[in-house]
Picture 1 (cartoon, rainbow, N blue to C red):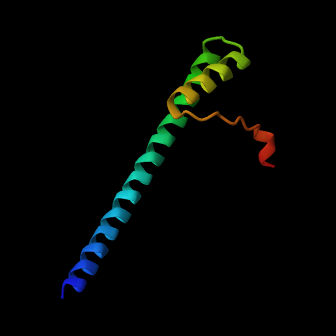
Picture 2: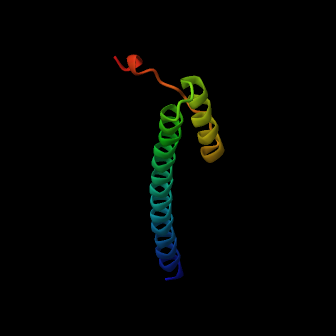
Length: 81
């Protein structure tokens, strides 16, 4: 009888762990999207404020690195083709 109880408890813990992992992943995704949007705003505001594009890119990269902690990868729009 105690073996069945242990299995049920382990299954419950496994289900809770799966739910927590899914919630954590969703939260991280939301955070990443927000960081990307703000990084884009940093770039746009810098360019619209009259800064040269390389300086604006550097500012955006610095912000991304400070928030996310990973290097930003610049993608040229022509590379999508």
